[in-house]
Image 1 (tube, rainbow, N blue to C red):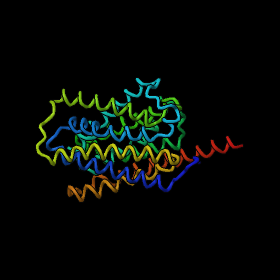
Image 2 (cartoon, rainbow, N blue to C red):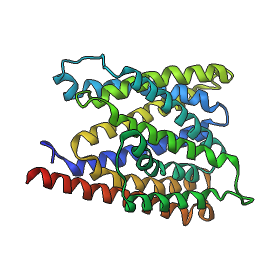
Image 3 (cartoon, rainbow, N blue to C red):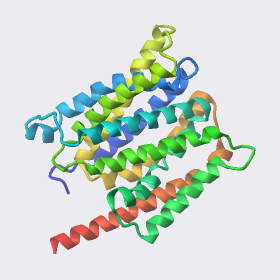
Image 4 (cartoon, one colour):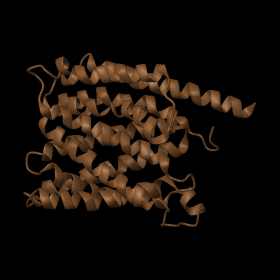
Length: 303
């Protein structure tokens, strides 16, 4: 238990972050008819860097370390920013070409990929139960994508690529030195994402003229809401153990379905089920197993 553990409030913040992420996705889908995914990623990262700066400024760990901005593993931090850019580009493309809930649900497979990637990158040992959970979740992904059927399109690979890249971002976060504040790592990655996204947008075809004032407001809102979502997650992770928050992330699946239904009149029941249930079950099994292992480790330390 952390000294100032506030699990209840942390859960509320994490759920608020989910709502903000979904709101960002809705705005991206709304704007995707007029602007490319590369442009939207660039603007998202540009306006999102301000909440990242706020998260760093409010970090007690960073202030206690003397407010240093230089980190030893800056190359890794910038590399993570490049990976984030690729994940965003894949996800934003999928939002433009697929049902909102379907694209969002497939990206929740990132928890499964994080477990698999932890073996080669972190040297972790994954037991039979967690591998079984990964297989269950991946079967859910296959059921949603339906490869080999007439319903399958290459666009379905886009959110899957995004899930792998987001998982890679999550795993590599654990490679940083323990004395580096998480908001500082996030700021480095955000800065690299801004640079990478603008470069891709430039070579993708440049930036389209903003059609009207309302689009400007939507773009500002997209970046601000997305950055604020990250800020809420950073704050919530400082309040309690991440394992206390992880199960609630799957509330995003029904939330995405409801929002897609309300705003875009999309009801992809046949596409999502039962695949979405299997993805959720697989993810929750992994979370449960990791909590059990963490409790065992703490018990051994106390003894």
